[in-house]
Amino acid sequence: GGAQKDLAQSQGVDGEGWQWSLGASARWKVLQFDYAHIMPPFLPSYDRFTAAVAFNLNPSRIRVEKAEVDEVFASQSKRYAEHPVGSVKLASRSEEPQVATLSVFVPGLMDAPTEKEIVLRPKEVKEVPLTAVFGSELLKLDEDRAVQADVRLTYRHKNRTRIEKATTSFFVYRSGAISWDDTRAAAAFVTPNDPVVDGFARAVVQGRDQAFEGGPLRNVMTAMRLFNALSGYGITYVPDPNTPFSAVSDTKSAVDQVQYPRGLLASRTGDCDDMSVLYCTVL
Image (cartoon, rainbow, N blue to C red):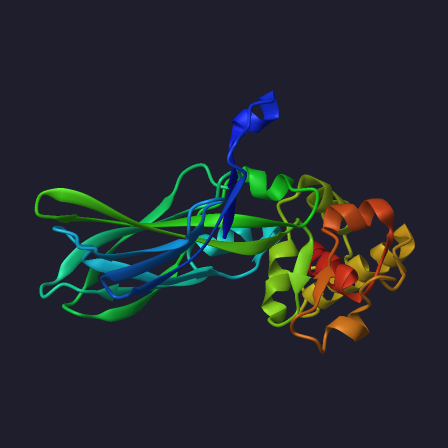
């Protein structure tokens, strides 16, 4: 619907008043039909009909039907370079095999698009996993936020380069966030190469224990000394008031927060997951 008025009336010149219009449009495959009913201020109302046929002399050979990216956790940024972070559903319209390059890019969080070469069989519908190499900016996020990924499929046909595009939105969680649907994700927080943690552990075990040095219980005694050292250092259990482990461990969709070992050595207070990660790290 629409309304039209002669601008001359705003300058004190007599105009023709308001003209009103209503319309509708329908599309079916390559056919499009349009209808409009126009009501001038003085003349009788009238109707307009149009029909059109759309065609392309060089239609696309591959269609991007769906693109999805899962939730991304900054603490697991390196994992996404090898393990899928999402998927793209592609449909080939070609009667011949088609080679294409699939890329994904997240502005502000990736230094360059992550690309992979794929081959689609004739008329094949295929779901392709997406991997992503994130830059250092991902670890610098100070808050969770929604971002958008640009997915592109590039291929050659009739000596021309064709690009099919799609976008999808997803959530990125700042460093320290974790989902307990897979407890192995906690390994991302075990940082034995951190000089702060390494220095703490070495200071504890540098003393010699003649009774057990070289004996079969040497590792057990070392573990005991590290455990007692953390207790003597003042590490205290405090449940997370926002996301206690007892509440989030049974909910796969829940997102928890874990301290890095360096952070727990500084704060000296944490819950069970924080302490487990710290103890594994010093071991």
